[in-house]
Image (cartoon, protein in one colour):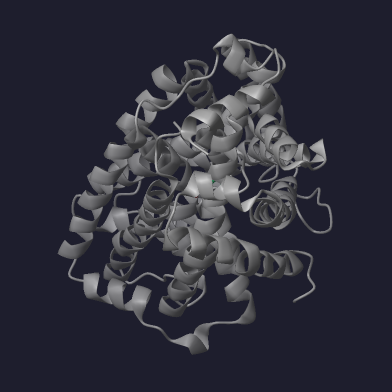
Amino acid sequence: MSNKSLSADAACFEGGTSAAATGKRGLWSSRLMFILAATGSAVGLGNIWKFPYITGENGGGAFVLLYLGCIAIIGIPLLMAEILIGRRGGRNPAGSMEVLAQEAGVSSRWKLLGWAGVITGFVLLSFYLVVAGWAVSYIFTAGSGAFNGATSDDIGGLFGGLVSDPVASTAWGTIVLAITATIIIKGVKQGLEKAVSIMMPGLFVILLLLVGYSVSTGYFGQGVEFMFNSDFSKLTGTSVLIALGHAFFSLSLAGGGMMTYGSYLSKDVSLGKTVMTVGVLDTVVALIAGLAIFPIVFANGLEPGAGPGLIFVTLPLAFGQMPFGQIVGVLFFVMLSFAALTSAISLLEPAVSWMTEKRGMSRLKAGVLTSAGIWVLSLGSVFSFNIWQNYTLFGKTFFDTLDYLTSGWIMPLSGLAMAIFTGWIMTRAATHEEVGDGWGYRIWRFLIRYIVPVGILAVFLHAIGALD
Ligand code: PHE
């Protein structure tokens, strides 16, 4: 089927109130814009905060190899599936799934899968913005010179002081949410494109500067060695599952954002190369972030396995001891904030696109309403580190519970459903038309039908504790 008849087909599924009909939908102005936005979604706290510390905790090289394997055989095929659904459906996630279910002649209940994306984005943003708020606040902490010559107790106290102060944490989270909402309200071209075309190049430049600095510490070789020495004896069964779960999170899979971004992508763009580019960039940024961070950690005689505190405690300790540490520290947290913000916008966009298309609201109204809801929910996550830290459900704070429900349950299940939908329910002709011809399509189809479902099932079983 040609592109022309495809859009005619899609038009048949458009309801009278669809945003396409009312002209509210935007389209990326170029393939590059889509790549910047999708890479912006993928590159986030996951790459710069989480990847280095879980690599540290899981012993380095062998874990990195596992992670790369998971990205290649599960993550990228699934990213293709998610963007494919969005692009072919051409609406918000729930709308797109409805269109495609109708096209495939299956129950319209498949739109629940789109709904899952919208809800996951909403919930995830409510706790993501708390950590993003810490990142933004650390730009100023680093700039004030507070790390200079500080002891590890001082630095631990600074971070502890921030997370245990509900007012400060709420204020920083609110700033992140306000910036995110302002960008979203302006729309795809005026808001999202402008934001990613400033922040993504900024992020890349800062990352390269930081790697340059890392090389100059003289400990670069030790960082490389740590990240790429493949000592498989350090791996445990859970490392495999952590690697797979993180591949999911890092590529923004099943969070609704990639599906929504796909729906703004023109039919003329080749999906194969575009999706590969996004997947590869996300991975390269995670690896380079590790190569920027570990040499600094080693040069200062610190431990790579410090856990979540690696970049908020260990790294500031290093900034306080090294030459130009104040500038390097500011640059680092600016980079982290850019990464977090471009991910945050992809978490808010699915809900806003649903409200504008389905409920006919303006972006302003939809943006304000969704942000208000997210803000209220985020208070629970802020309080998990202070006044509510003793209120737990099965031993988990509110923050941990949301994280567990989204990453442990909804995301793997949605990923599984997405693989089944694109691999087994959509016709070969339909997916072939989106992905294009050649061996790339055949490999993708094999992976999405057989390998991806089995891989996700493994993560899911782990999440419910069956493999522990
Ligand atoms: N990929 C983002 C990160 O690495 C997080 C994210 C997940 C964003 C799901 C959107 C959807 O931080």
